Length: 591
Ligand code: HEM
Ligand SMILES: [Cu+2]
Image 1 (tube, rainbow, N blue to C red):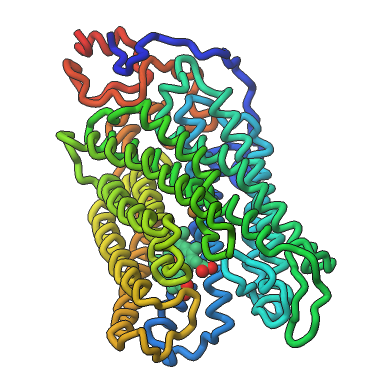
Image 2: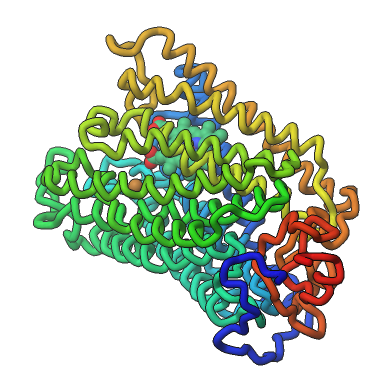
């Protein structure tokens, strides 16, 4: 029998999907700009997300210059430091990573990987992108209004975000909240597409348990996002009402700049609960697509089937579900009831189990594999190392007694940059090197890619590893200048300088990457349809880049799971998901 998984039956999916006439663009505008083709929308999402990501990167340089060389760069003042932190954090987490993984990779890969012609609601999918773009523009406009963007931190905690005296209290905070509301509306339109396409748009033979883990990761993350973003949505609407109409959902009675404020009776803690009910799952909304993609990268580039496929699927689902009951581990210092802390510490540590299972399975996949150290593989390995590293510090911070002294120090900043900054970004890069040949028909330059990997990987460690130590010393986060204090030795300043120089170098390495992306469009080596000899459907399209409708006349039929690598007896070391059993048998598979 050709099939490898334990449910080796030639199955037909529960619902046969009939052919639906695709929307056909009639003009240049509807083909390339207001396009309803998921592949075009994916590229629009990806380009927008990476462009705004560059803004966040430049902001991080400005902050790092200030931290490394305080006093030398007098063009940032303390208010601006807070504003840059806020914009940097929010852009990186939401407008770059969430948008890129779901709107970018989700749109490109889901229809191709499940064997569909497009997303199920292409018009709504198109609107999703344009609303996202509007959200980005509203966000950026905050740099140009009086008072500038909000400086409330990416957590936007009231009361201070909307009180006078906070930077950006005038218009910045309003624009931030409006932008978030727009983002969520746009995301929901895309998200419904991703979920319904995975559930209803699969081609013949593509059972759920034959989906590549990339699809499982993006699918589960989308379901989570559809459940978590509403909490941020209502929190944003209520905070906007507090700011604009003088309601007091989140505002207690307080004195504002020496005057009793107009507010009273609200609960700032309620905002924290709503924010983190969204905020913690958000970490996994970014991490699960990364988990899925990494699984496929290491399986393809190590020519081995993924170890424990079913366990990997269930681990993704378990992590997704558990991450909804841990949110208050971000609130250990909020004065909440200690019993609550015990509950949330327990649930937090339980997540380590499915997560560790995934890591073991990646390692077992690599074990005795025919590892090709291609650029995507390097980034995948970089991800695993970094994620484990950030996960370990997460175990520290998940415990109440350890978190309390470390809370609001640079240790936290180091921890979350490792887990949800550097680690997912490694996957983004690995994925781009992996799928760029499918999107453009050309390979990215390998030497530049290796250079990009090593500088980014080692550089990220140079920036964020010493930061743990600063945190242990007690250096607080969100401080413009740590100055001379009894507990911070002079060496800490040297370390800060070192980290800032590393940040500049890492930033420049990204310019090399962008150069590679643009240069290879015209000059890259021709890729052919399946340069990595991968099994999944997106590599089996009749044309590369795939044409409108993806599959030509007939949809592919799926006969096996996505991981038929190095199958004993096969002539080639991979058997595509859609290769009919007869042909595979003729090649000697399983005979
Ligand atoms: C070269 C890469 C990066 C550098 C040099 C960098 C640098 C910084 C700095 C200096 C801060 C302010 C720390 C403080 O004073 O509290 C910060 C905050 C932050 N960064 Fe990054 N960052 C980078 C990449 C990322 C990425 C990829 C993410 C994506 C998750 C990210 C998410 C955040 C968040 C959420 C904050 C917290 C903002 C807040 O406190 O409100 N950063 N970063
Ligand atoms: Cu959390």
